[in-house]
Image (cartoon, rainbow, N blue to C red; front, side, top):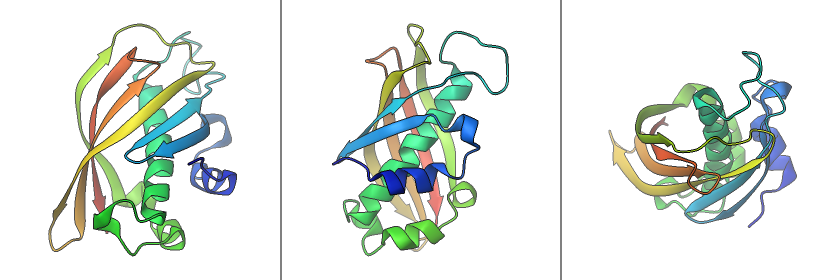
Length: 156
């Protein structure tokens, strides 16, 4: 399923315009795939390659879009009954956290001007009376040039 442009624009709206790197996304549960463009670094002179700072931003953008769509379409049983309108009221930046990064590998440089990435939801763990969720994911940018695992926490 392709992401509706409205949903993509809404979710990326929390980022300053020069840091909206996700151009489009498509989903096939439990995987989200995205096309990214980083025209220039916002924090340093051009490095000429995709680096750890951009990794986190790109991961976050695809993860937010991916989980919004999965929740909206009822694909994650632990979040069943949630709508996109409820997701919009949920404060993404204050209620979701990266709690772990493992197996981070930068195998080869990635040209930041245009590249692809994907995230796979591996597992959802519910804690504390269904108000705390841990989502285990793996990611892969540009066909294995950059890979790893990120664990997220979501507090409802």
